[in-house]
Amino acid sequence: MIEITQEQQDKIAAAKTFINELASVQDLYYHTLMVELGLNKEDRTEDFLFDYVFNSGDEETFVEYLGRHGF
Image (cartoon, rainbow, N blue to C red; front, side, top):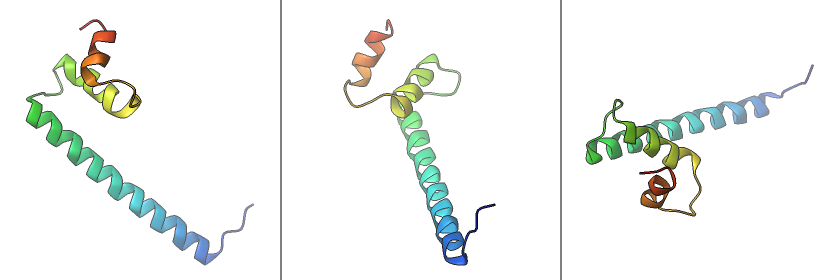
């Protein structure tokens, strides 16, 4: 089994806390964007927005992304 020093465990715990905090900020930004756009979970456009924001690169705009998907 791998041995983890207390210093390493402390660094792991700090990284975990930081990443969880980032996730909370990410969720807040995304929710705020949905509210500003007037979208909700039932809106099909929200599926595309989620995919665009979290899974696509920077090579195209959201309008271009929608066009590529037939909208």
